[in-house]
Image 1 (cartoon, rainbow, N blue to C red):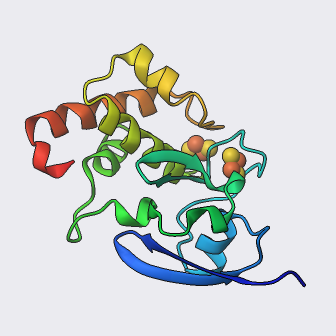
Image 2 (image 1 turned 45 degrees about the vertical axis):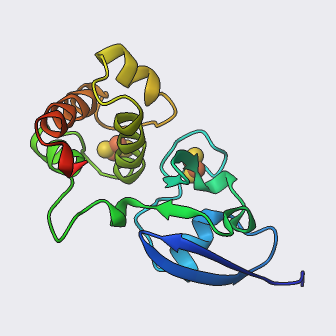
Length: 163
Ligand code: FES
Ligand code: FES
């Protein structure tokens, strides 16, 4: 067995640590060691985006990030989006605009949309489609996902403190 590494980082604002082999992928550490099962495992080959989380202010596909690369990082998963028990504007908008069916892609969609709106608070439809092209959905046809991101962008622009 390979030497274990103690990797400490911040997960949804809280300090966490895990003993991992150097080859362990972030998605497994999140789900199996830290109980953050919101990020889903889809393809494990960086195609589907179901495992997308935010790391140091960037969207990453956690099936292609080694946990040891996250030492000292600030990681945000879908569990960290709500504030004081209230849904994030994106979560609310996905609900209201029917931006999901089975929901398997949704945590990754939300996390990618979160970073997209941090980078571009008022994206055009084309920018949303381009910015979320790395996240696949087998159910919705994407139209309502785009509508949900547009709706959340409008709400966040009206109430920026909720970002
Ligand atoms: S599970 Fe990571 S991109 Fe599909
Ligand atoms: S809602 Fe089913 S995969 Fe997107």
